[in-house]
Length: 239
Image 1 (cartoon, rainbow, N blue to C red):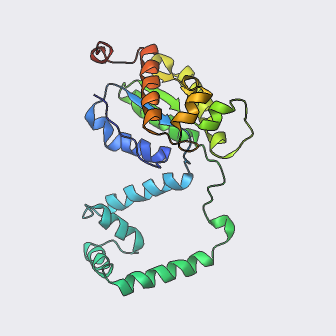
Image 2 (image 1 turned 90 degrees about the horizontal axis):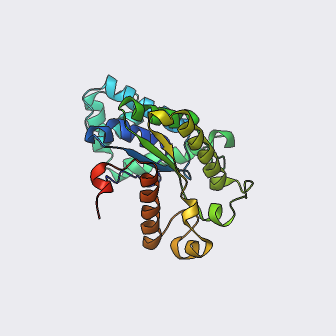
Image 3 (image 1 turned 60 degrees about the vertical axis):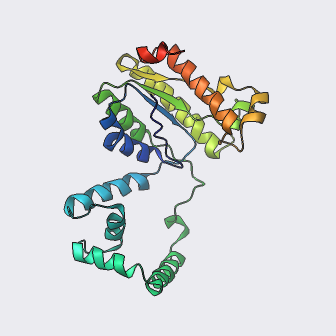
């Protein structure tokens, strides 16, 4: 059985939080991390620390909308959160908040805005995710995300942007697997499973694939798992 726990547009920090708080409860036999194009920012790490602190200080917060409301308020009492959510139903209140947000945004310096132009690879996030797997004695296969340009121009290390991030993750994942191989950490790159002709039939843009592409990716990942001896016995015996 394969649990598809991928999250569209997720940062590595989001995946680490999901692994620790949700997926490990399912007691998987192994973890496959396929990542490389999305940003992972220190802002995301701070965001999750803030959420944990909020929940710890306000045990009456049960639902995501309550958590969202608490982040907007200086006071986190149950009555304040309830009132804010009630006011949120008013179109006038929503419009006023939007205008205030626009005014505040206009006063920010350019350096204060989050820019997607700066590649962000945070090694400690990856190390924490791997350490989480090791703590539960879970083998993990680290796979950098397949990008079209990385296949067509494998030696182009000066392209920048998401390609630069993928090269960073490739090197980082490989080094982590070499350091902790004895404990079950493995590395695999499946870029080699794609030929230039296959790329033309499999990709809809730089990183997203069509149904044919994802079937090809699944076969490549299965082969990598078999090569590393990570498949559970029942899966390896399946037709």
